[in-house]
Image 1 (cartoon, rainbow, N blue to C red):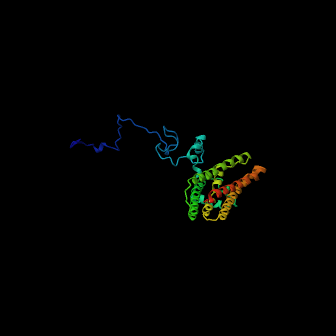
Image 2 (image 1 turned 45 degrees about the vertical axis):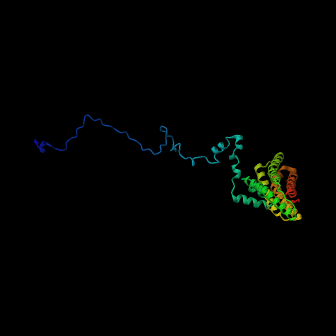
Image 3 (image 1 turned 90 degrees about the vertical axis):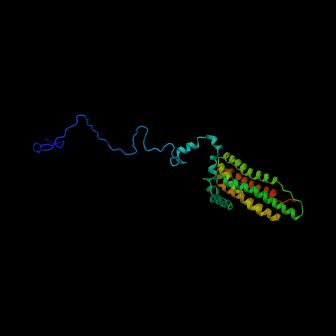
Length: 283
């Protein structure tokens, strides 16, 4: 029956529901059961392997190996003996702060303790010895110049500045701190009691600190007082070096006493040389 352009179905002829008619033009698609996967995938899929990796241009500051890791040690030793000619090879010997340097300076003023080598066994530095020697050079030049200037003016004599005082002081202090530890290093190695070369540089460098206040006190115009100051400074410096090396040198056998005595007398000889050339005023 047609009504208003629509086809009506007789209700009497409809029973139940109308069965669905499948479209012959459609192909049914069946999906296979898929398992859930976690992200990132644990297996190797294409170019993504294992865990998530940062991009190549990412900052890898936190992924770099630590200094004590095997990879870090391999990279540090990769340069071989050429690594000794780089700044990075000597950077650990200057890695000290103000408190470390001040503590070692105070330790050198108490020579009878003999604990300096124990405190610096794991971290000897070259920062303190370098600046102690540099300070000694300028203090020796300035104090020596000032003392001679005052002595000449008090006697109304002409005064001339001696530039050789700086070069002489540089040769004495830098040479002493470099040559003496090298010779002692060879001697100790010969007697089967080797010591670290950097530790010897550190010990001898800090042993010269006592001469800085001694030079400042040498401005007093009394010859006997200058001799006393030089003697006390030399004795303290020699005792500081000898006692700190005694415990180590005793393993060299019966020759340990001669080595310690030689170290003590050599340090006293340095004090005598400084007295004759720096603490003595000639007009």
